[in-house]
Image (cartoon, rainbow, N blue to C red; front, side, top):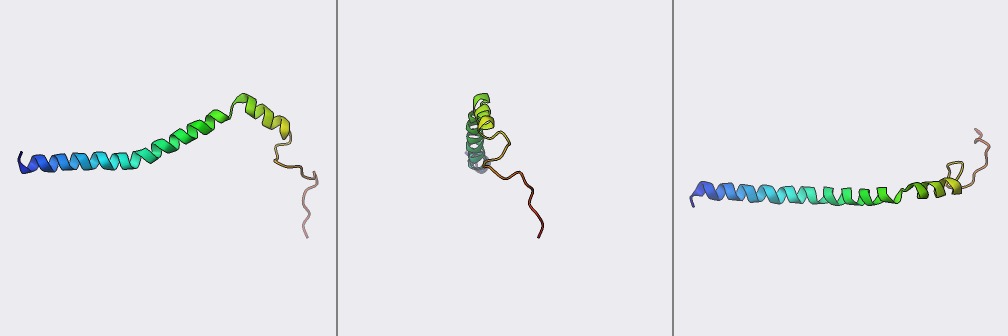
Length: 68
């Protein structure tokens, strides 16, 4: 093996390590997002809409706020 072969192998291994270091967190993030998307089924959304028909998380008075 000559010097150029060692440099090429080192660069290749370094590139693959850097690619893995950068792409693994992206892959994990996409897996979590996919799991979260699966939770939003049609049945889940129907139950949420039935529980909160006006689109809010809590009951509010229908009056708009007044300016002081």
